[in-house]
Image (cartoon, rainbow, N blue to C red; front, side, top):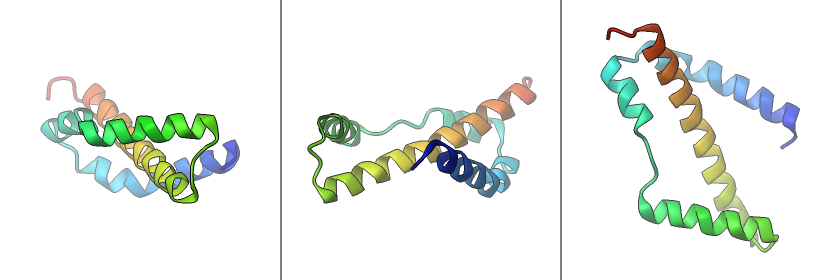
Amino acid sequence: MTMSSKAVAASLLSGLMEPLARCLTPASAREILALRPDEPARRRMEELASKSNEGSLTPEERAEHQFFVEVGDMVALLQAKARRFLAEHPGA
């Protein structure tokens, strides 16, 4: 994905997630900020990233790596919305 197409995709995803952002509470925002992959998922992501850097991913691994990247982008976007919510509601 090129940088401009990635920016367009991020913008579209942000718009799709806006209804979720409107449903945030202080507790749910903090839960979103605490999201982290479990240990097996983290190890697999590291393995796939390493193989990607080496250029040795199989087609199946490439698809799996892309899935992790896309999920990571979605979580990062949700976390940004959660941080913004908490910044806008400091006493909450």
